Length: 302
Length: 172
Image (cartoon, rainbow over all chains, first blue to last red; front, side, top):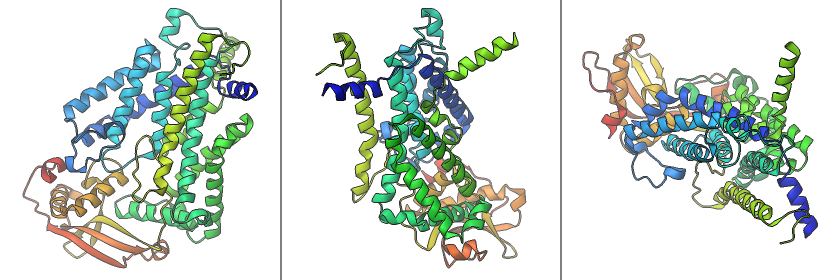
């Protein structure tokens, strides 16, 4: 029993430097800030939509009707402010959870208008993990005030990063399970369903004023190719949790998943920005080494 | 609880808390998996069972969309942006919901007013809300005519008339 606990302890509470969650906080915080700023007008327009289209999900599911656009605007501005504090790591003990809660609320509200954007799920979960854990003990205003912690690392900085990677892997795993548990079962891997999905998506786009990807036309008749892609993506999704237990394998898995999203982009024209940017997989890497590298480059120049 | 060596009381408590929080998060993320076996699965956010690619696809598909008809009988596909705010798929679902709710006429009128303001659509005299059924193999082979079409609403484009454009006001 104690050996098992020791193994769990060593795996889940692996030491990491404070800079690791801090770099993730800055990267993901800047991304959420960009996400919200870029969509400010659209979010405001959505908040003025026909109330009959309101289908609340997540933490807003208890709302019987939409909040007024003015209330939504205030919440959105509060989220911006909390987001800036999150990036700067200012009073993180309070602003981190505040940002996590507000961002969750705004994103649930944004997804409550007849369409759920699943590509945002991991972003919200990652922002929440970083907001609720000590991710501002380095690279932050708090750290300037208090002083940086021991650079050797601490388990307190390791487990939130491990949790982020686990959540990422589980979201892919669930997508794989949904395919196998669906009406086609393992037959999903034949590729016919994937081709149908891509074709329907292209058809919808063209009839609603968009454009299907030229690759969707070029590849449509090559069913075996869709079979390879379907099998590949299914394997990638179902092995995701297992890959977590082996560091090099988990990084290889992340590269595979990242490539899958670029493949979807080229064939379907669907942008998974958080995934395609690679940010979703950043927790699989010792991202703090980028800082060390930047510092060494600067030292070389001066 | 057996402690790995070198752990004191407060540290164990702190780790137990972190472990419990982690376990709770993992269970919460995994919990929606049960929806796969429910008769009427319910999707959520940010916790989901990711049903988007799991549906069985038939060889044909139905899509509800907007069409502008020209004076000379020409067809102009009208972009989803005339019908609502958000991404293509979000507005597509909203159009479906409006049609299911029996409000296709109202949507048609709103779109007609917007079309009336577009110079590049000066030829369009009628707007229709339509559901078309397409055979996918034919469509991707370049045969783009629908197998069938159902017109839910049809309305003329009045170019002198101006009315409020907000979907929220007109559909409510």
